[in-house]
Image 1 (cartoon, helix red, strand yellow):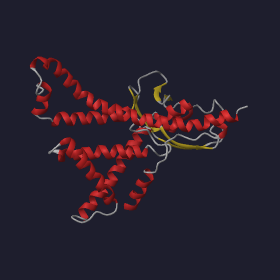
Image 2 (cartoon, helix red, strand yellow; image 1 turned 45 degrees about the vertical axis):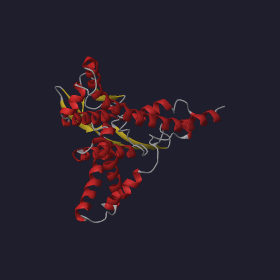
Image 3 (cartoon, rainbow, N blue to C red; image 1 turned 30 degrees about the vertical axis):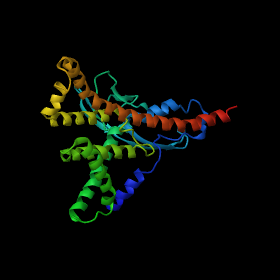
Image 4 (cartoon, rainbow, N blue to C red; image 1 turned 180 degrees about the vertical axis):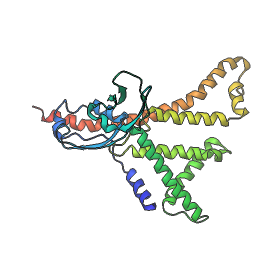
Length: 297
C-alpha cells in the first residue's frame, strides 16, 4: 500500500499538461477539423463521460480511450433512470433522454433533474479517495511509530503539515488555531491533490468549476460565523476607534466585507485554474495553427 501511494503521488506530481486529445496532422491541416476555441471550451467544461485521448483519425478509425459515467436522472411521473452515458453517445436517445451540449434534456420537453456522476464529480471522488488513502496511511504510521522519527510517506508529508500549522494556522488564526487545523489541512490538500490531478492528460478541471469553489467558500464562511465570539461581532457593529456618527456607514461596509472575503476566494481559485488551463491549451493550439499556415498552399 505504501509503495503504491508513493508511486501514485509521484506520477501526479509530474509537470504534464491537461488536454483532451492531440489532433493528428490531417486534423491540424483541416480548418474545420481543429477548432482551438471549441477544444478549449470542451476541456474546461464538465462532461458525462471521461475522455482521455484519441489515437488515429477521429473521423474514421480513431481509437477512443473513454470511460462512460453513470447517468442518474429523475423525471416527474417517470421516476429515476440509471444507465451508462454510452447509451447517449454520438447524439443517441435513450429512455426519452438525450444530451445537448452536455445538458441532459427530455425529448418531450419535460423537466429533468440531473444527478449524474459527471467528469468533475468522478474527479472529486478520486481526489477524496486519494486524500483518505494517503492520510489514513500516515496516521497509521504515527500510531505504530509513536515518538520515533518519521519514515516513508510519513516523512514526506510531515514538513508540509508543519509548515501549514506554523506559517498559516498559528499566524492567521492565533492561539486557538488547533481546533481549525483539521479543516484547514483538509482544504489545503484537497485543492493541492485536485490541481495535481488536473495536470494529467485528459484530466478534469475540478477546481476550475465554480460549484466546487463555491462549496469551499460557503463552508469556510459558515465555520467563521459559527466560531465567532462577541469581539468579532463588536468589531462589525461597533468598530473600535470609529466615531458613532460614522457607524451607519461602517456597519454595512463591514457586513458586506464578511460575504465578500469568501466570495473573492471562490472567484480567485476558479479564475486562476480556468485561466491557467486556457493559456496552456492556447499555446498547444498554436502548434497546429502555425503548422496549418505553413503547409497551406
